[in-house]
Length: 502
Ligand SMILES: Cc1cc2nc3c(=O)[nH]c(=O)nc-3n(C[C@H](O)[C@H](O)[C@H](O)COP(=O)(O)OP(=O)(O)OC[C@H]3O[C@@H](n4cnc5c(N)ncnc54)[C@H](O)[C@@H]3O)c2cc1C
Image (cartoon, rainbow, N blue to C red; front, side):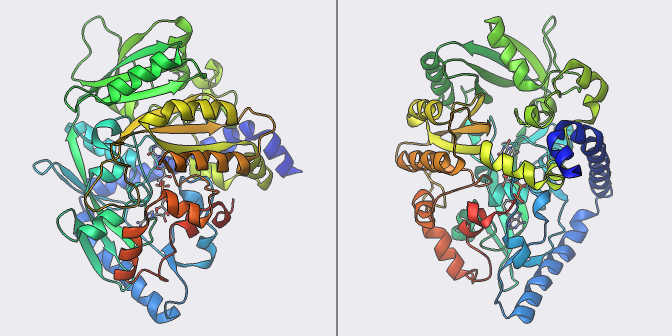
């Protein structure tokens, strides 16, 4: 009875219980992180904490003889992926208590961090110093460990590539308990095999990431289009410009098959006199995607200066457009002014309070997918989506996938360096809709055009299809070389739909 009510009145339940709880949770985490950074105690303790991870790995060998694979002890509900891996219940769990920023090196232009550091933590530490990560994946709660071992992208990815491309070095604890460093120059095979490996090579305990100078604002130009062809032509043109000429940030939102808004952003020191400054994340402001849609409705473009952190986390309050389903009245001015200051709810707490019924409904009627499509196949993919999914808005984010002499899990076909992340987050509008059948069709399309699926999402591919999409050559070799086979599950056994519970 109670569960039925929670399911039916999910928005009310989230507003009354999850929002206040999220506030407490965020307050605690924020205070803890700030304290650790201010006291500057993390670098000193980092070595000891890594030794503790190594000791646990050696313990695993002694206790199990290596019979049960290992995984991190981070509970599934804390991760951003919408489903929880079944393996967490059966594998040997190793505690990775590494949530600190270790060092900001302005001369080298890098920041050294532990894997549990979140994007919110990094922007809060770097931006006031005039620096930023070259790629800052959108949501505050995303962790470096997850972005390195999974994937990460942002509207600067047309310049800098995926999150993996801004990584300068890693330190991992391997199956024999050794702590190994790697970079492009040192142990390069391991370095190139780690991105997308989903912890199948070892436990990441440190990453060194590239930083770039930041300015106080992003000058954002909104360009509405009522013709898909014109929109896509300009989108491709802007994305492919040489590094120095390209806008610092490029993003597109398609609001229907024909209409969309292209956004071009550039760093800016100040707001010119008479121009509009818009702190878009103030709690009383409309959700960002609705703000973007308003330019389409008005039928004319616009420009404004957005404070940098507001820009980076522009989709956080509404989780792109997912919040519409969770709190349907969340963008109403009354809600925003009265309760908006508590938003957004923590994704981990949302997952923790999901009833089985809600989960079944999500599984059946909801799609959360990001596909990386070569730019040359974007138009046909969008037409395919109109037929098979017919859901809008769609997120379009251009991203370069650099080829490298040592090819990892993800690398482009010759001449296809520019990709587009197409994000589908919502309820497909085609009738009848069948999650597995439709997703499998999309996956087949993506394999055909040599694109990739983001693996936080459900993959319905078979193991063979998965190996066709992702090049396992280097990963397999490194798993054998470092003794990871049997010690850590392979990526497919963590990310396939069958491997994930709710
Ligand atoms: C609602 C939602 C919004 C999202 N928005 C964005 C976005 O805006 N931009 C973007 O780029 N991506 C986005 N993503 C995808 C996101 O990048 C991935 O989920 C990513 O893997 C980070 O998630 P996480 O920090 O929760 O990591 P997890 O899901 O915890 O980890 C991902 C993988 O890495 C492994 N791993 C984590 N830490 C370690 C470690 N220390 N050692 C070894 N293995 C480790 C885990 O075992 C797991 O297999 C979104 C996902 C969701 C569900």
